[in-house]
Length: 335
Image 1 (cartoon, rainbow, N blue to C red):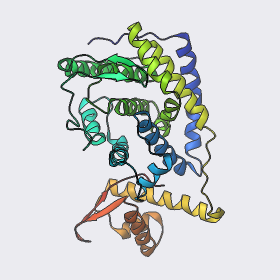
Image 2 (cartoon, rainbow, N blue to C red; image 1 turned 120 degrees about the horizontal axis):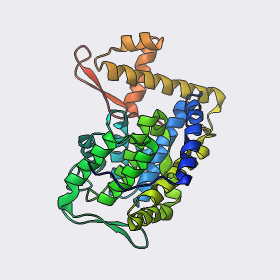
Image 3 (cartoon, rainbow, N blue to C red; image 1 turned 60 degrees about the vertical axis):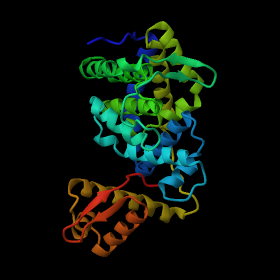
Image 4 (tube, rainbow, N blue to C red; image 1 turned 45 degrees about the horizontal axis):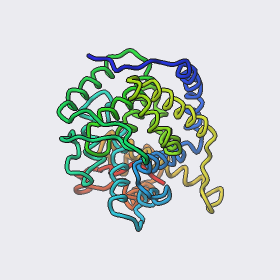
C-alpha cells in the first residue's frame, strides 16, 4: 500500500492543537437552545459555498428558497446542482468515508442529470483549473481505479491523526481527479465525512465558507503541493481554514426576522419536534401518528398538524394506506 507523500510542519502541529481545543467549545455551542437552527443554517452555508467555488451563482438566500420549495428564477443547471447537493448531504450520516463504493454512490447523487457518467470514473484526461491558469493535469484515466483503491486502503489503515489524514486525502483526491466533473464538491464533502469520524460537529461546520472566501489560496495550495511532490502546503492551508471556521462560527447567533420572541421560541420547538419525528421514522418507517404523539407527549391532532407541515415542506411523504403503508424521508433540511 503506497503512502502518499506528506510531512507535518510546525505550523500544522500548532494548528492541530488549536483545533483540538476549539472542537469541544463548538460542540457545546451546537447543543445550546438555538443549536438546531444553527445546524440547519450552517448546512445551507456549506452547500452554497461548495457550489459557489465551482461557479454556481445562486445566493445563499436562493439556496434556502430552493430547499423550502419556493420558485427561484435561475439557470436550470444551477438549480439542479443545489437540489443534488441537498440530497447528497442528506446522506451524510449513512455514508462511510472509508468505503470507495460510498464515494461512487455520493457522486452519482451529486451529479445526477448534470453529467452522463455520474457515479463512474472518468474515461478521459482532465485538469484542475483556477480562474487564472491550469493548476494541475490529472493522471491518465486508466490509472484512476487503482489510484483511488490505494488511496482508500491508506485512509483505512494509516495511523496518522484524522485531521491530517483528511487533508492528505482531500489533496490526493483532487490530484487524481477521478471524475469528469464534481471532483471539488465531492473532495470537500469527503474531507468533512472523514473529520466527522473525529467529531460529529464537523457535519455542521461550514469550512467551505472559509475556502470560498480564499479560493485563490485554495488553488495555490494545491499547485504548491503538486510542485513540491508533497501535500504539506495543502495540509497547512486546510488546517488553517478549519481553525478559522471554528473561530468564526463559535459565536454564531441565529436571527429569526420579524416574528417576535414567542414565535421564535415556537419555531425552535417545532424544529425539535420535526427532528424527533424524523428519528422515529428512521427507526421504524411504519410508525403510527399515535405512536409519534406518545413519544412527543402531544395529542394525535397536534401530531397530525406537524406531519402535514412536514409534508408541505417536502420533508416526508406517505407511501401506501394508513394501516399498511410507511413513511419515506425526502429531506432533512428545514429552514
